[in-house]
Image (cartoon, rainbow, N blue to C red; front, top):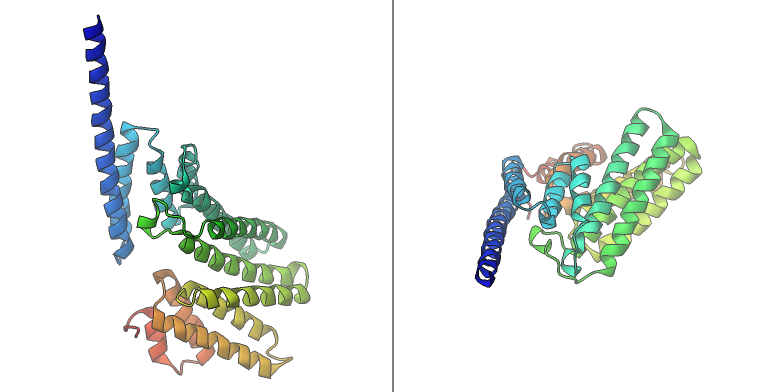
Length: 297
């Protein structure tokens, strides 16, 4: 009886080890595909391959919560926020130590992106009260990420290998907060008046300027700071043309820095268009650098 029991236990353990080993192998393949996606000009095929490997992991072990976390991260990168949230919420069900502290932070960042997108859609349709409500919610999520990631600066997690360090999450949340604050200024002009709009623009550029000083290599921060300066310049173009020109010059300065440091793909066209608008097309080489068609220094 004891021999049969021991034999049965041994087989169960062996089976579990086999399943775990296969799942771990699929997970490693998914990580490799994810890493390739980060450096590829067209990352979608690598993301799809990674998702297939992760689905294989989950098929073997539905409680392999790290697989859900990576799926959520991929869908977030693909801007499929619904699936991203679905998988990240599943990932949160796992028991995590400090090494997975990034999971709830990325969940909040994703929720911020979702509500920011909803605010943009509501603003485009002219539903300003709803846009304001959505944007306020987005800013709350971004502020939560800023505070959480800052409190965990220096902590190493298993997302470091994906470039998702606490510092990266902090900087990402700051740039999203700025985008949200400037959109809130546009909304406020419709719901609360120009004085509130100007107050929000000043608040956004003042805070973002100090963050750029701390992280001068972050081109998304510099891009949004340039956008903030441009918006401020437009509001006083007639009432104070000298100050308006000064702010436009500051915006161009930030964009020139972006051109030399290189921007993420999704910001290249907006940055080049903004610079063209500010410089009136007099610096085509800088525009080309912003677009990435000629190399930065």
